[in-house]
Length: 330
Ligand code: NAD
Ligand code: UDP
Image (tube, rainbow, N blue to C red; front, top):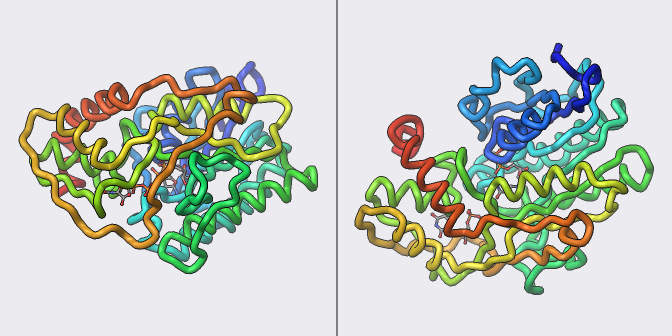
């Protein structure tokens, strides 16, 4: 049993996917403000290393469980963050049926838990609900351009179904559900071998390997530093009243993949070449969030420019490459 929950001022918060990249930073921030945290994770893409420093914390508890199984938590819960889902395309496509089940059955189980505890609920949705967008930048009222049969569908359509579940539970007044549409986020604790662009390029550059760019490199993404995202997620969870609609969270700065590669090359003293590889099927050509809703409702906007955030991330990978990151990348 956790110490401090409901007896003190802090809330008791369950973080599903709390051993992942985003989740572990959410756990840190909640503990830092005095909450008690129950981290539920199956470690399918996350790492015990991400939460190892927290394991002796008196207000932290780890539960190893797949959220596709029904959850039974004894402590009264105030809030539930659902971050449990592989986020990197190679990882979510490795077992697409499990990814879809995580999004649908997992979100359903966590919403049922929130209902039993009368806990507020935050769903980590994604810019992928917009697919390969025909509107640019993407506002929340854009309904998207998603293939329901392609290799990304397990994630994109799974997340869309999860949003539908959240809004059904909200309309039925069964759960105080909130939905964040997260755009590409990066920072320390990304897995070195998770296949995402920022981790791939940094690990390749630090290892002196060729930087892999898929397609022409002219496709764009908007990259948000992890501390900015965590602030936005917590603001959305805590804001009153519940906005009752999805909220984009991302950094509106838009960069081509070629530009990103050049920035990373310039930060790493090793000489590296760029190699071009085929573009994966259904890879979105451009992506940039319109964050006016987050700014209006949450007074939230990112503060860490890409060059600064990349600097912190390169430094973190450089330090950890001596250990687990170099082994994972081998
Ligand atoms: P991640 O892979 O690092 O973390 C996901 C965590 O969830 C891992 O610890 C994993 O072990 C756990 N998990 C996955 N399936 C599970 C299951 N069935 N049961 C229990 N645990 C499970 O990914 P991340 O980047 O930290 O992403 C966190 C959330 O944010 C995801 O829901 C993702 O869809 C969303 N998101 C992330 C980004 C991003 O750029 N990082 C962008 C959009 C949305
Ligand atoms: N990408 C790339 N090289 C890599 C990994 C990814 O050029 O080593 C490209 C990928 O095809 C996509 C962009 O970078 O166009 C972002 O990929 P990521 O997997 O990080 O995120 P997502 O496609 O989900 O936005």
